[in-house]
Image 1: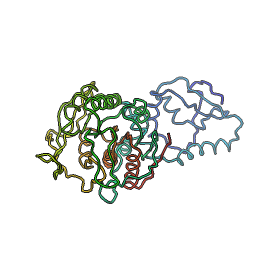
Image 2 (image 1 turned 90 degrees about the vertical axis):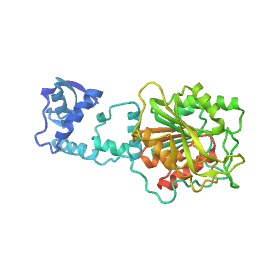
Image 3 (image 1 turned 30 degrees about the horizontal axis):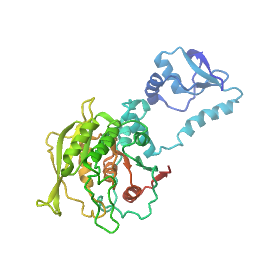
Image 4 (image 1 turned 120 degrees about the horizontal axis):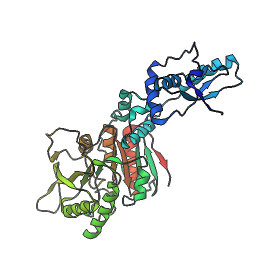
Length: 394
């Protein structure tokens, strides 16, 4: 296709142009300023515009003296008239894939790109970035039975609507880069292995990988995973790291080694005790809270919140060793992750972060080492949303 630069004043708009473009000119002006004049105006052999009336008006408003032009030679007057209509009408036939559109918008938002340059009105951007809460039936804390023979294989990537799940290793930078190809997450929310050799209570109980190491091994492992996650967390992005109180010192040392500055310790007070062999039965779990250095941190709530988090335990939790209620994770996301933002969980477990993100209009990026847990997460997503997950084999 031949394209040449021509004086703006040498081309003429079609007098009977049936397409009203008054409301589009401002957006096209902004687009040309941001990206340049990338699409030529198409004219007939008499220099009358066939395609590009809005770009022509934008060029005039910008004060351009020349514009790229393609002359559509050899068209009959009828063909030129039909082409003019078809170019406008065929553009209206395509529809948006809302999940993929939201993914693209979130990626631009993560890069601090001016979303107004996409041409979407502000109310539409908000609608796409703030997915409507799902309205599934059943208990959001229900966790399906783990399969004996999982579909997932190490290295598989699952696309769960706008969310992503990688069966991989949280300590490997390449795995995190594959999970987050479009930029950093806004929030880190994770429940790492507690290093207490904990397992579920049913015959098919899930056990947690990397949960029975020496203190030194555990600190090294956790520091590696958290350090890798930090490199994919936006400056000022909040982090929440759950842990067992018995491993509190090791987790704090790991955070320090990873470059995470702990600002506060939150305490989840459970609605019922966890029966064990200690003199005082456990009825709480701590969570270290802070944010990545380099920018003011994100806080979306008021100043009435406290370090004590009172949420009921999940009613059914026998299959997963250390379950957290979805409502608890929703609360944390609503405090620290903007609507439409990305939350990273490098120890996804049974997928509580995913369910909380889905129900609050955030996007989850998950890593889980165990294929059985990955299948649990996929099953949980599909049963909660009615959507089908897409597996990209390793």
